Image 1 (tube, one colour):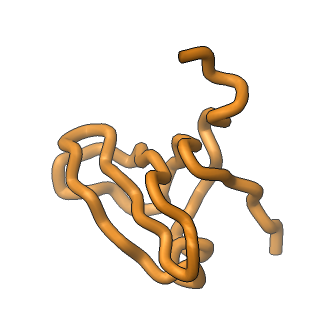
Image 2 (cartoon, one colour; image 1 turned 180 degrees about the horizontal axis):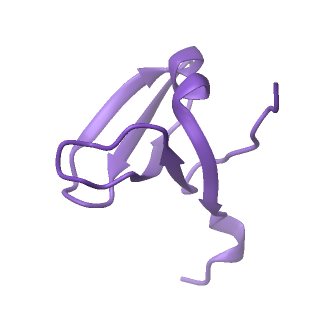
Image 3 (cartoon, rainbow, N blue to C red; image 1 turned 180 degrees about the vertical axis):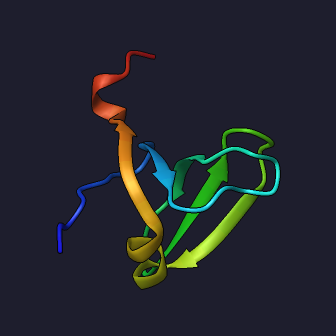
Length: 68
């Protein structure tokens, strides 16, 4: 199984769609739990790290490569 590397501020794509239709999320808090924000509607969800690792599909953009 591939281990995906992600950091705070990264945009990720999840395996399942959010009810608003978006599959893209931004990581806004990391720890034992990971808090993510839907980029479609702004809804915030907190998941245990183990569940997040199972549901993540891919990392779309890295915080370090995006200019502010």
